[in-house]
Amino acid sequence: MITEGIVQKPSNISFSDGDDVKLIAGKSGERMVSPLHGALYYETYYGHLYHGYNTTPTALPISSTTDPVFVLWNPYGSGVNVVLVHCHIGYADGTNVDGSVLLGILTNVGSSIQTGGVISAFTTGPCVNGKIGPCSSSAVRFGISATLTNPATQFLPLGLSIMVLAKTGSASIKLKEDFNGTVILPPGTAVFLCDSAASVATYYQRLSWYEYPE
Image (cartoon, rainbow, N blue to C red; front, side, top):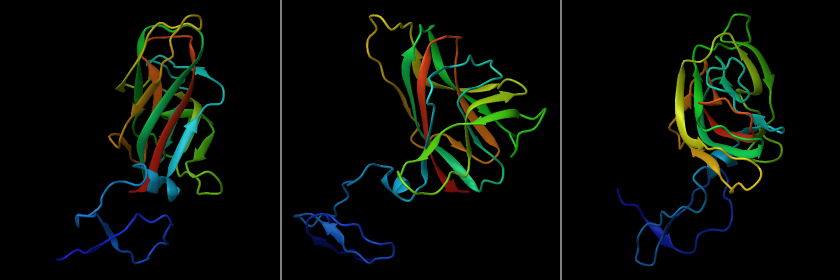
């Protein structure tokens, strides 16, 4: 098979779905493959990427909690897999206790809140599509608080270390985890953020993901 291209500047217009276009070649006839957009531009452009966040900073609960405060739940029947993209944590107030941020894992969660079920209470939190403006709604559930019948037993360390910090004299820090598609939530699973140690410090938090058909 022979693949041909055309030597020209990259286009500065957006084509429509289904348009026939010519591949771009460089001055030496090489095929141009340099990315013009961020890695997740198209997932965002087509309305598949979402951000769940809190508007009031909260403490990260200890891993043994039955009251997580930042929960992403993919219920049975959603029809999508949830692909985790980023986790951002920004310090707000209070003094930390040394610890490590973990991702609590819940399985066989089902599709509804049930007394005696994995999740027995759930408070929906703010969630926005990455393509700002009128766009599709998420097929999954994001919550700023929940109640578990039993504590989680599986945890994934995120490599984010929370050291002792206080407002006075503290250095600026950035806590971010790039999942890069390494964690996928099929229907019937949920995850939440927690800490290996109990702490009263509060954080603004954001979890980003995209949804793709099963």
